[in-house]
Length: 68
Image (cartoon, rainbow, N blue to C red; front, side, top):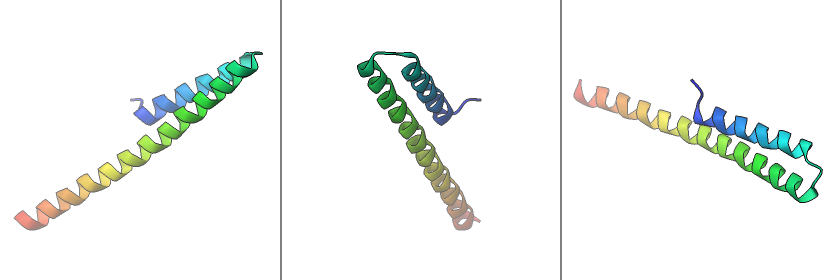
């Protein structure tokens, strides 16, 4: 299953490829900027997912300790 981060990285790679295929300087810059944005979003989402997983695990441990 493709994660959100994987999907955003794929979209960033698509835009990077589009940037290499165009000869129009303004389009090239736009595609390069879009690629950077998708890749940053992928990193941010991955980081947030790790934090959320850590919080979920901490709550589970807390509940186990509190209610056992």
